[in-house]
Image (cartoon, each protein chain N blue to C red):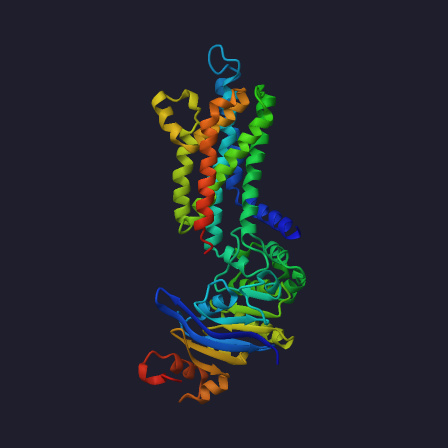
Length: 247
Length: 244
């Protein structure tokens, strides 16, 4: 336990010192929230809608930090710790290197949680946001999206040859999802053709789960997204476990 | 005397290429043992096979009487390791790296004492990457000593250091030796090996070409200087030292 606490504390400090996650996983979602809030205000999502545009978009905003931390952050840190032989160094200590990976997963989950809470507070206080559906359902959905996206990052970092390749693969997954999955640019304002492309992206499915939970839409509508997210999580975790390169 | 490291018939192949071939040696308690050889001779591979971070293809290894394949978590409480490459996080401070390392062990040494003993106590808050080469190497020795180990493995500890910094590291190692610590090191500097090592093993393309003391190495070569003898042992010419 002492080992774990010290590791978490130290790795968290080191991570915060890197600053990039504060920008991409915490500040950026807030900026997008404020911009959407200013543009759409408290307007209903469409004429006659019982919820606001912002309420419709909140799930998407909450996914930005999951995507940034899970895909870019985790992939890079895993590849980096392997390249710097930090994982190898742990192999010649009484502690198994998997513990430091677990600590990293926890750190990126913390970033996502901080982002979620800050978005929630600002949205409620400034833009009159409220959850129409179930908070528990939202949180479970959020966890599923988190696990699924994080498993992609661990897989990419675990099997990429080096940090550079992990960065390239991470970017190829991260930026399209950030822009086209509805995380920043709302899915609802996309033309239908673009929505079709967007639907292929994993995160789009995740956002549908979060959106349905917030707006109180029936779970039946999001069975496919749930299956997709769970499948991605299982597949990526399996691949990561099987092909993970410790050095 | 108690045997701390025992290697029997160790072999390691990489895709048919023999990185280490049928290597045997033994390191007794309190001894400084030098594993020598040109780049690619198999020194690091040998260390990694001994520590179990690489699987050997043949042979057996015992550290402190135990197989490093089993009981890893118990055994590595008693072993300090410094690999050739420096392994630390980009934005980590000296004190943090020490604290993190100490947290991995049940009975770690007080790292602040080690920092002051090695003269880098004032660097506690400095980023590791901002240390000079000599300071970094001293830090890496400290990290290897934090477990309060009975044996340490130091891979090319002084590579990249200036003459002064190398001398400082020697002093530290001699001091540790006096305290009874067993050390296995690799080095490319023969002056260093002469000063530090009780026994050496010279590798050439994965094979043992000499095993004994520095004095014996010089005596059984046609040269008077150890460095010349070393070069003679590791020379690539076929006629010079087959079957030594």
